[in-house]
Length: 215
Image (cartoon, rainbow, N blue to C red):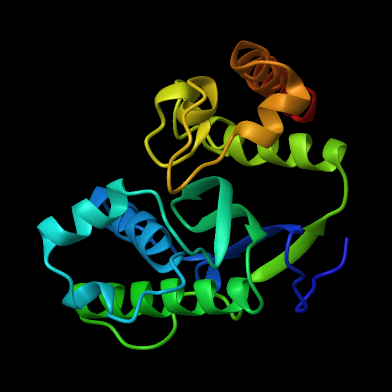
């Protein structure tokens, strides 16, 4: 898989990045929520006002609405303490680049102001890999959704608050998740839930065996 910088409308990409020197980019729930709010806000092509200048009640109203003109459509996501994953489809020319620039620059300003620090918080530019087929798409979505379980952050993947797994299982389209394409491939929300959870448990069991053999 090669990193790409040219994005085509209608194509799907895996976008990700981590904290500089692998440091945490989220320190509490407010930080996680702020980046999710950024993603939900800046995916709208008509946005001209910085999120920091929008009143809280107005922002909540915006984030509940269905976007009208999008830069990207977010299919799924997962935020981890020191990195994040997104699967998105570009909606218009330059959409991914603008969406990521606005979202991450805004978050960096927020983070540095809140914690009284200076300098970059992300490790260079975000990485992007084109998702070329349905098989790659469904396995990638499962991979990002099981991240918190494999990292021993939670034993309850379905209720992990910083991923899109719950909307997938409930088949709920939101500003931040569009499970329709993947659920159509898998067959149903229940089948997707089993697809994710069975593999998570199997993979973790293999890791436990491997660790025992190395002791």
